Image (cartoon, rainbow, N blue to C red; front, top):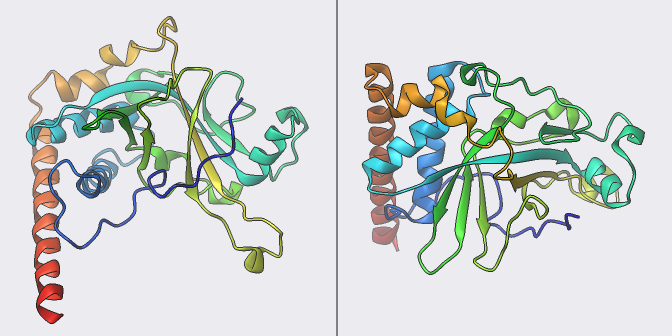
Length: 261
């Protein structure tokens, strides 16, 4: 059973990076990379449910900087605060009221309005990036978590999600990791005794699941990773330029602030 998420700042949707110049591969730099990559792929594909193609482009962008990332198939669930509390109380999803809601890709989901990625031939899965951290542990980056954004359902996922997986964590299909992407209204704003956060949970798909590796042969993956499509090449080049421009701007801002002190 999942536990109440640890609301650490490193388990959130990607915020605006610090103004100091981020080093390549640092947490702030990775957030910047994710934001630039997602902005570009939303324009390229004109839809949100493109986890395979967007993850592939993310791999190519990271490769440009000499960073290795492992694409990983996961089950994922986004759940609003009321749904999470009812689930923790043992209330079956079939008994939830309409304002308790979850969506995603996972066996036994109550309901979903997330369409399958047409670019994968209808793959019933979700793809994220896993990076190994110096000294142990891993970082999960979900570049397309915003496809689960449903404000009308009190589900708020505005951008890429970052989640640290501690070195000692088993992170198995029975043991999900959780990220809080939205804190919800304060008690003063909502008139409630508690906030209503949005929680995104990730499980690695079982190796024996036939869907676990099917994305590798999908057109969404091969068109990015196994071809020299000029459009894809231009997108990757543009993302790299956006990242480098943002890094230089952050460096200039940091220098101005230092001079003003």
